[in-house]
Every structure is written in C-alpha cells, then in structure tokens.
Length: 471
Image (cartoon, rainbow, N blue to C red; front, side, top):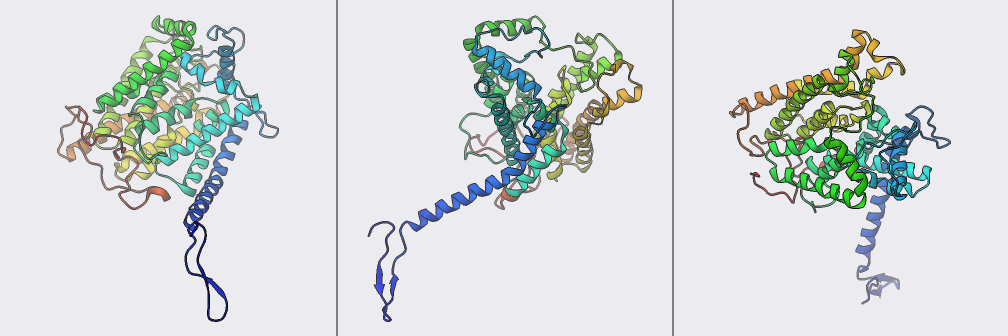
C-alpha cells in the first residue's frame, strides 16, 4: 500500500469505510505542529519587535517612528567606518564634526554588511537583530512563550539603558548577548555547544576591549580552560583584523601601546557613570586626560568587583557572578555612558527569580537595578558645566557608582557569610570551580519544565562541558 493511502471496505449498510490509518498522517501532523509553533513564535515576537523599533526610532532627540527617521548616532559611526573600510580609506583620523571610531579594527569589519544596505533598511535590520538578542537573553534566563515576550517587551519599555542603546544604535546589547550565551548557565537555542566555552567572550573582547575582564573572572573562578579559550579567541579575531586591515591595525594597537586609547574628551560629561568620570567631576581635574587618582580608584573597585564575582561563582551562583563581572567592567572603564549599563536586564532577572540568594542582597540589588533603570541624573540639563554642579547634584550623578560599589561590598560580605555557614574557609584557596552546591532550584517561565529545572543563578553545566572541576 502506498504512503498516504488506506484500505477501504463496504459495510453491511452499503457505505464505504477505511480499515487502516493514512501513512502520511503522522508526517502531516508534525508539519502542522511546526507551522503552528512558528506562527505562535511570530505572534510572541511582535510586541518586543514593536517596542525595540519604536525605542530605536524615538528615544534620541529629533528621531521619528512615522515617518521613519531615527537619530542613531553611533550606528551612523559604524556604518560610515565600514564604508571607509570598503573604500580602503583611513577611519581613525577623521576630522570635522564626525564622532570618532574608537574600537579595534575587527569591530569595523562587523559594520560592512550594513554599509551595503540603504540607510533605513540597515537601521531596521540592526534594531531587529538587537531585539532578537534581548529575547535570546531572556530565553537563556529560562523564560519562554508569552512570558519571554512580556519580559523582553517590558525591558525595552522600562529600562533606560536598553532604550537609549537602541536609540543610539550602540553595540552594548550585542556584547552582553555574546557573554551571556557563552558564560551564563541556562537553556540553549541549539541542543549542544559546538565551540568551547569562552570563544564568544573572546569575540566580544575583540569588538570592544572591556569584556577582557571576564577572562580574569573565569581564571580565578577555576574555569582555566575557558579563560584560555577567551584569550585565544580574542587573538584569532585580532589577527583577522590585522590580515584584512593591516595599516589600521598598526595605528590602533600602536596608539594603545603608547597609552592612547582613542577616548574622546567627554570624561566629565554627566552621563559618564564610571569611577573615573565621577572622580573628574568631584575633583575638577583636567577632563581631557585620565587622572592617576581616578585610575587607582577604578583599579581598586575592579579588584572588589571581581572578588565578589569569583566568590559567588565558587558558591554555586554563576549567573549572579557573570552579572557582577559585567557591572565591574562598566564601573572600571574610563568612560561608561549611562546606556552602557544594559547588564541591568540579566541582573534584575537573577535577583528577582533566584530565591536561594540572601534576601538582603536581593533587596539591595533590586534597588540598585531600579536606580540604573530610571537613571535620575538624566533629568539634568545638557549644556551645563558639570564642575559647577552642587554637591547634591554630584551625589545624584554618582548614584550608579555609589550604589554599585555598595552592592559589590555587600556581595562579598554575603558570599563569605554563606561560605562560613557551609563550613568553608573565608576565601577559596584552590582553583576548584565550585565548593558549594546551589540550593533548591526555582523554575522560571513556561519553558522551564518540571524535570530538573534549575534556578537562574545556579551552576548548570552545559551538555558539552566536562563533569569535573577544571584545574
């Protein structure tokens, strides 16, 4: 009998009936199920897509959704740089009113596909990709279905760093997505990891140098192999930059070796929320140079933040540890604009969902996240001289730094308390990845399932990872 055919026979009353199931039916049923799932995902994706496109078009002054006329200033820099790459022109010595391109040459290559599109088409494609990355991050943090749609949409409506990043067309969401999918435990889009842990973080570092701090975090957390992979991935991407753009690579890395990072002169600007930015505003030193005192403070905070991340990773909370490392990179960098703080998305979810964390740490951390979401200092007027701010204004402007340092210190104290409660020494003395098993799991979202679902912050192993501590 052919597939798709069935036997028939005549009944006693003269009617015909089938005596066998259609062989093609199971296949047709599977196809229909796939089509229904795809249609459902499209429906779920519509609210986040609208939120992302609307924020991208309207968040920055003079932008418009209808007619489509966003003011994506940073995206314009990437595309203009990519255009000069295609034309074989220098892109590190642009004069005039243009904003400079300050990233490594490898990052310039990523803008080439968008330079081949018309302006509106390129903007829309970039924003859609960013929305999909936000949704992917939410999925990684164990949301699915309508809950994923709701969380992704709400984050792009309510979180100022995400909205402004979309409005400027910045790379912050891309960098965060690469690190989250590389290092944070959770479900995958694909069934297994095809490349070793650390390689996406290395790519992120080749795009913008600040994610290099994750290699330090990985090494001290006992994930030595992942730290090495991060370094090798960064080197490989940088070599690609040298091969394709040898002249520009020599310019960028030569300047960096000589102490010129290419940073513009906006360190004292009130939206620069870094340690160094606040140091410049409080001390009123030359804002065109990185002050030594600010550099020392930034290095100290970097040590504190990495220590907090390593302790929580060793205690079994990799999700929280990755978020703390992301915030450490932001505070320690010379310039961290308010919209760079996109790490507020995974941090908020981890603190809300992971009931195994100490209550006071969760409460304080969520208060800090709300501050970052709302960014009260954004109510200050542009054009004012930050050196003429009152002490109250400077303290409000420094809120992200003050609350952030407080969060790091509290995280260290709480991590040590958890260790002592579990009979472990105050500090980890080996390169063992984990010393404390995570507490009872808390499933998140409709896709968490009931079979062994785990908390967002718990140290879930990916299927391709070895089931032993890395030495």
